[in-house]
Image (cartoon, rainbow, N blue to C red):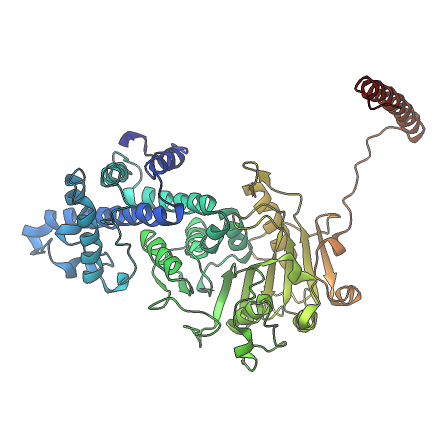
Length: 518
C-alpha cells in the first residue's frame, strides 16, 4: 500500500490494510494469524519510537556527550531499547530472505531480553514451517509502510489505530472466541463516557486486550487532561490475552500494572489491597466454570454467597469489594442478572439494591458483541450517593435507561451504538446525577428513562430490568381527527379482506390444477 495514503484524514485506510493483511493469511486460522500480524505491528511501533529518539540523541551527541547507542538514554524516558538485530530497518532489508522468520523470532527474543517489562509477552512463532516465508516478507513490507509519509501524525499514533482496528477485526473473524479478548468499541466508549474517569485509579480484573484502559486514556486526553492522570490496574486469566493487553498498552504509551503474569482474579487476586476510584469491566457472561465451590467463605461475598453454577454475582461483589469509599463501577452483564432468582441470585441482588449501591441500569440492544447475539445490560454501582456534587436528593433512587431501540446495524449480524446514541444515554445519566460539567436538566422520558425510588424497586421484587420502569414511549398526535382516522382504517381493513379473499381463490385454483384440490 502506498505510504502517502496513511493519514488520519483517510478514514478507510485501516480497512484497506486489513484486507491486504487478510489476503496474506492463506490457510492460517484467524486465532493463530492474529499474533503474527499484531506482533509485527507492535515491533514496528517500538522500532519507530526508538528511531525517533535515536535521531534526536544523534543530533545532540557532539554537544552534550549523549550516546545514541546507550540503552539507559531510552529507558530514562520510558522508551523500549531496541537492539540492532531487532530494528525494523534490519528486518525489512531481509524481508525477502528465506530466513526472515528466524530473524523475526530472534528480534522478539532480543527485545524481551533487554526490556524486562516485555518478558514472556511477544510472539515467537515466525520461523514455524506453517507460516509461508514469502507471505511473511510481504506482510513485513506492508506493515513497514504504515505511517510513512504522514506529516501531521506520528507513525506511532497511526500504528495505535491500526492495532485497535485489527483487534476488532480478529474478534469478528474468530466469532465467539473473539469475545474473550475484545469488547466492542462503542460499548467501551459508553462505559467510559458515563463513568468519566478523569483522574484516579482505574481497575479491570478481567481486562481482555485492555480496551477499557485505552478508551479511558482517550477520554482524559479529549477532556483536557494528561496521560498519566489515571493509574491503570488490571488482570487477565488467559495468558495469550494478557500478552495482547500488554502490547496494546505499550503501543499506546500507557503504563499499567497488569501483574507479572496472567492469573485468575477470583482465585489469585493480583491486587488484593487495591481500592479503585473506577472499575470498568466486561466479565465472562454466565461463567459456570469459575470453581466457586472453593470460595464459599471468601470475604468478598458481603451480600451473599454466589452460586457455583454462575459467576455473575461473584464478579459484581468482586467489583464492589475493590471500590474506594467514593468509587464507582460500570460493567457489562448478561440480562439475566437483572431478574434471575435462581440459586440465591435474587437475594444477592436484593441486598445490593437495599444497600443503595445501584446508581443506574442500562438495557442495551442485541447483536452488539462478536461473541454472542444476546442482549446485555450495563450496571453502574456507587459506594456512596451522599454528597455527590452537593446533591443529596438522589440517595434511595436509581436511574433506569432502556436503550434497546438504539444502535445501527453495521452488517447482517452486528450492531453498533453511534456517537449520538452514546451522547443520549450518557447525557441522561449525567443530567440525573447533576454532574458539574453537565448543563442538561434531567426529566423522565417515557419509553427511555425513569428515576425510580427504592420503594418502587421493592414493588417490582428488586428486579432491575429498565423496561419495567420506563413505561411506553409517548405516541405523537398526528393531528388526524378520530372519526376520520377510524373511517380510513375501516376502509383499509375492508380492502385487505377483499384482497385476502382474492388470493385464497387464486391459491385454491392453482392447487386444483396440480391435482391437490377438492
